[in-house]
Length: 375
Image 1 (tube, rainbow, N blue to C red):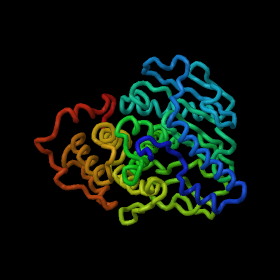
Image 2: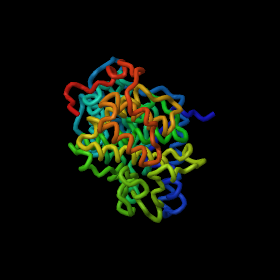
Image 3: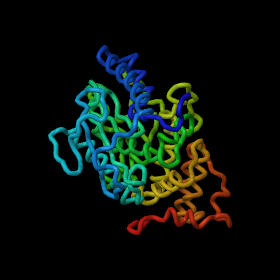
């Protein structure tokens, strides 16, 4: 029986890989076929294996604990340890990018949301680089990060973008909080949440406001042989790439384009374009640093109010309500969130725009912004 709660999540969606397997040249087809086979094996193996625990990593800690391993193009996890907090500095760019990217993601969640690593309890951040021969993906396997090298033509190295690293690690946070089912709308929300926090980590690292961001996920992933800008666009879903071998970006930006698909767990990587676009619209309407306002709303809903089978309308309603709880009912922030969902075909009940006697103080206390925030 398929486990819809604990899925290994990959940076490159299955629909992109399947198109490459049909339309790429011989070398691409060989690499992609091997990637698809190995991904299945990783899921099967990791579902039964214990998480790797580095020496000394079992102690609860409020500090970053990063470990980067090198698989040396084999398939044994985690591989040989090459970087940790005591032994830094490497000539391997992928080791450094995996190490730095996980550190930036840790710092973002720690400083912005007071979260202690992926599980909230100081979980060590484990990465394996150089997995397999030209493995065409990066993935969170439920316990650690795995990075392939790409082939240098269709995909570059998979440690290149911090937003991709943060996207995959955020799957681990969803796994430890809302436990969203990886199926249909709940699965698409799972992917959306990773994109939303992935783009915020990139914006935070670069010091970018909503209007300064490119709103592209995986801008550096596409190789020189591909016609495209990124693997997804939150600003304009459906426009990220258009390439003979890779296909055309199929993401919709509105519910009228929702795709009912038997593949990819009900199109989780495709339909995530709808909430992605709502997030972008709300962020632009509010302006400023996205993590200070919209990020607070999304984090509250993810960690306190979501349930495993939540659909798009559930999430829209919850974020509109949370916007009122955090920043004022009927205020500019709540109106911006409400309008954004309406523009993608998911209007929330207007009753959520009014404070009621059922508003509970513990939600407001639980979601207080950190003292250094000033939205």
